[in-house]
Length: 553
Image (tube, rainbow, N blue to C red; front, side, top):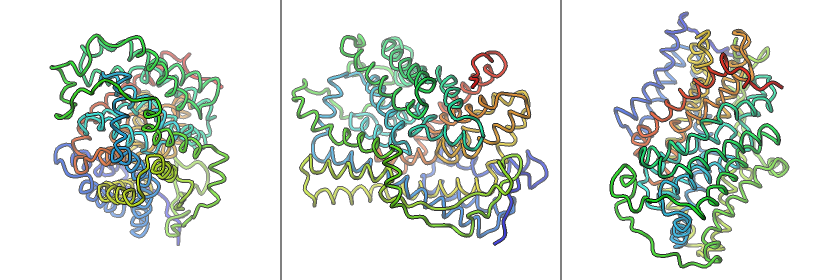
């Protein structure tokens, strides 16, 4: 089959071409905000729109457009949906075995303040899971935990999506930064260091913002010591690790240190007034109606460890699974399937092509053993033995999990199909070129490329692969720091994670809110845009005012 080269300005007017390219994105926004369509319905229509535009306007061969959609759909099923199945199954095992009552009481023993529980679980524990595993597992697990603690499920999912902002740039063992370096030609260590300099203030600010969402300024004042300790310990550790140790470990170390610092603080300090005592304000609206204060803590250390064992085992498994030597060993069992109709047959063109004959690959990897989802399933199997759940009951719970997640899995497949059609057709680059053409204002808009990339793909890694080269090339043309611009792509990308269709579908599935994707999207979208503007302003100031902050390697 003949190679097809992407065309980024098919209508010979970049603004008109970009307007046509963004129609599916606009529709998806409207479908979830104004029309309030269910996730799989919005995803299906958006996918059809993107295929039609790719074929009719951007000249993509029909077969390539359909194969791109199929490839994306399969990627949504594996490995992403597999992770969600494992995470929800593990959570359901703890609930069905009765151990979640002990987990809930142990968390309340540390703090009965709902605001601080979100920081401890959503921000700290979620950050650790992001640094170790990524790919949807953090939000799935932490949102389910908060829902089990009595939070309104949609608010639990929304808060966890917002809390997951800070660690996304470094992802699972720094993979987003590594990919950014590979596609841009900029040293990855420099990108990692620069990213921590950009996200320092945002990461320190996120815990405070979460409390503000929950309880307004009153809540911020009451919890100020906790939010400062949580945010600053995270930012300082992320900065120090990325500069002096390794950017690959920045996500894990920052979350661990933050968790330890917050837990230590709560041993001798607590807010004068806790959530459970509040009768007014926004926080009470986030609690399920049937939640009652828990009885005094009455469990032994052994009982607590036994109850937490599924999540302890989960943490160990996903950490081991992401270690390079172990992953290399497991990858020998991978199966690869080439989509011959598009693999090596879609060529990038200037200005995003890195080299001559720069083509897209389309090889589907079925890593049955090496997948993170498999590590979670193995953790679940070990937990079944520890929690002494019968094999028959365990199978019934697994089947129940699959039935509950069927529409979410379908939605994830559809939005990934849309993402791959958009990327393979060149439509995403067309949208990006408009932002890249903003001249002196480009440093403000550069993070929005990352924001757009993560919205389309659900992954900061994919966003960096998509736009990293464009960021570097534009920086050279405008005489800006390529390190700064490529880092801003990763920094901006973290703000798009909370509205990515993939993330929305995952969070709704984990909290049993399938069909309410529009409610969750409307909850997070304003925070996503607000954070993106903050990163844009930081990047603009670093480009022209605080140039001493730019990392030089």
